[in-house]
Each structure stands twice: as C-alpha cells, then as structure tokens.
Image (cartoon, rainbow, N blue to C red; front, side, top):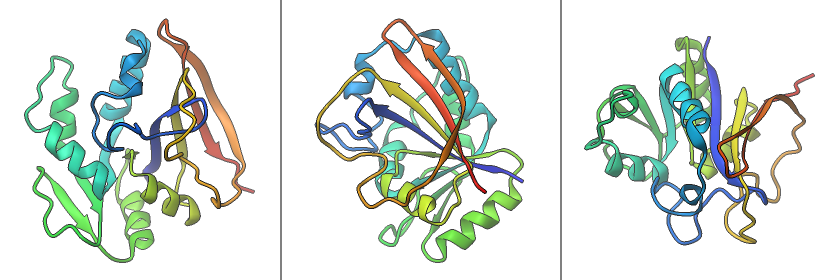
Length: 192
C-alpha cells in the first residue's frame, strides 16, 4: 500500500504561496532566494524518484503542466515528473493534457483511498493548498514533508488555514539543509 505524502515549501510563519506569484507557479518567489544546498536538492530528488504518482489541485497542476514538459536535467528529475502518472482534482478542468494525467472530479476521498491501495510507492502532493485541506479533513495524509525557509512574510495563504481540523503530528525527521538555514521537517499524523 502506498503512502500519501504532502510535500511543501513553507515560510517560518507557515505561508506556502508566493504573494507575488501563484501557488503552483514553481518558479521565482521567496523559496528560490535561499540556497538549500546539495542536501536539500538531494532530498527533493529522492522524494520525486520514490514517488509512484503525483496528486495535484488544478492551480498547481496547471503551473506544473506549463513548466515541466520542456525541461531536461542530468539527474532524471524532469523525466520522472513528466513520465509518472498524475492525478488532478478539479471540477472545472475539462482535459488534462500533460503526459499521463487523469482528472478526478467526484468522490475524491474514495478515489484517493483507492490510489493509495493500488500504489506501492508514494502518492506525492505538492502545492495544492485547497486539496491538502480536504485530504487533512478526510484523514488521508500519511506524511508531511516541510521544507521550511528562514523567512517571515507576514501574509499569504498558509498550509494550514484557520479552521483546519486539530491534528496531532509526530516528528520523524528534522535536519538543516544548505547554508541558508533551510530546515527539512517530516511529520506523521499521531493517530490513536
């Protein structure tokens, strides 16, 4: 059985979007002003290589679909992103054009639970704040991987918005990466 992993770039004050850009843009913004070093880059590479599929909300999906198809790199990151199955949760998207993409319109919780049963590796969620909130409410998240950047932006959409369900988490990993003070924090829900 696969694991649903929410992986996010966040500021110290919990903001995940770039107030000057879109949450799914994947380029520019505050996260790319900090050197996460080779350890941080390796963490992200390992994470993608271990994943069996991506699960994304529409905004993040559209940003990724615009950015990734033309990219190449020696490590194989772009090939993996472009080749793996992608599931986009949307009630407004008619077609998902990016290679190996499927739209999920209805019964999201049931379909995500089924995907977790069918995959042996990770089902990776990047960005997709609204979707993450829904997955949290349905108790479908198995792990949170947060790359915390040493910045307070004072506003913007937070990973966990006011009104999110109270959820106890258990820290499974904490380590600095890169010279800029970026931290990787990995949590699992502390289910009873």
